[in-house]
Image 1: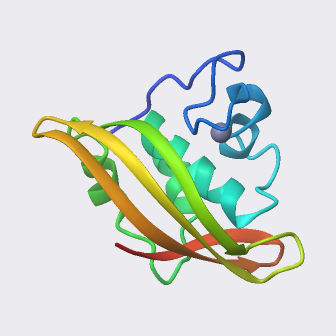
Image 2 (image 1 turned 180 degrees about the horizontal axis):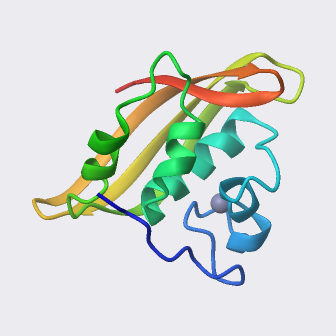
Amino acid sequence: MSTTRTPPADETRCPCGRGDTFGACCGPVLRQERRAATAEALMRSRYTAFAVGDVEHLLRSWHPRERPDRDELADSLEDGTRWVHLSILTTSAGGPFDDAGTVEFTAVARTPQGRQEQHEISRFVREDGTWLFVDGEL
Ligand SMILES: [Zn+2]
């Protein structure tokens, strides 16, 4: 199944809600023009990828050991969920000089079943200078 959706325009507000435009925030990370410098930046880019249906960025930024099946992931992005809000609560490590880090967040979605809030602590590792999502604890 193809889930290619039109990405947001660079001058529009980035879905991750940091307050920047897409072109100055998650856009270049999704387009592989620059790497996420921190675990939080990668987490934001993954939230944005969920919001805009960017399967390739999600797969790329997932640790190979934990990476889901492409078709299953693509299908899960087509279930009618619309991610509408992200709040980063806390971060630990995950900076340019760390090899691991965690990001605690809540994400709000509108689903066909109603409003859904996800509270998660995500774990990230940095390998060869690239941050990767490992797993999350709900
Ligand atoms: Zn962003």
